[in-house]
Length: 495
Ligand code: GLU
Image 1: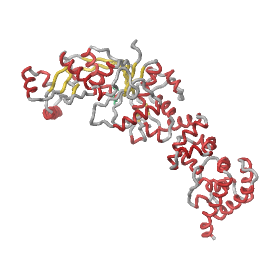
Image 2: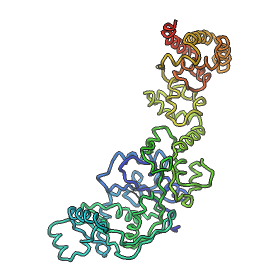
Image 3: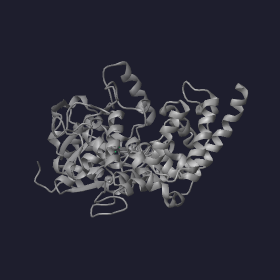
């Protein structure tokens, strides 16, 4: 481990909504920084202007904030090493590109796109790949001619023609490549924008990054970066390339085909950020063979690079759903109620404030808590507490092995009974309705089923007696009466 104070960065390119893979990279960097009392930097790698997407940037900030991954330096918060968006640092890259040319580590290349396309085609037929290094060997006279024609060059790295480049990665071990396999990559484009390689290396150096943790799709770039560090004479940071995230079955990379893959999807589906953090931490990192649930503080205390696995990890939606349930059950009633508000408001088309003011909101928590896998589940489970418009097909009211007439009678008798019931508590309701079922020659489950559909509009709903108590006598009676009306034509047809 380097003896410099830990400085790590998450360096996304805002081209699309933040993917869970990116979120995990951010999380590991954040945990590592917090564990070592270091600094977590957010850097925006936005030099590819054709793929730039302003919405993606907003989404990035929002998603990181939602996950609670606060950055110590970066956009919106500033810091001593800024600016933190690469598009605002063009002169810095230009300066370093010129320096490399001056010192003989890089050269200007004047080749036209047409020439490059032609050699690419020729190479496709042969063995050789990449640029043919034509401009590496230009004479001063040739260079002056190109300049005189007004051709704006790119800058390319003069990769050593022989020898090897070796680097170490704390997760992946040591890799050696033959320099002959590397081509003279472009560092600075003719429009003055750097390539990823140049900007990334310059910034990691200037921002004094000590450890580079990123997805292992970047591993092939490392030899080029190492050559750049060597050309500049800079210290090479410690590399830790994180294993790729696989689909739930472990076959192939996780992709949209398997389900939602963007952080915003999970937020909108009602996953808790706590669960998401815990879950993502465990995709590729383990502490021991058994512990699954970690609070944020525990993750900070335990997280380190030696727990990061070399092999790819599968993304299990089932495990995430389970974990989310665990975290939902741990929330205090008021906290859970408040988190449900936006979901209910959106699902029911109500203002959040209107939902928040409803007495039922707090009252239903003990009834629904165990049944929620995600916060959105609340809408299907409990919408009938908040709306009077409950609709259902008459057939739903007819319990198994009963007739419409049986159920119509059951509704009428329940109405009469509940209208007179001295006290509308769970115990009195249960006792009264159980004996009514006996009287009617129905199974308790059959009668309860009819009443459940009448008051909730669904066969699966929170526990019945708690539901009746919270709805209150007036609403229960009016819904039973309405159900009786719904059945009337069906009963008529049968007679
Ligand atoms: N901008 C790169 C990305 O989008 C960053 C890679 C790195 O961390 O070096 O993932």
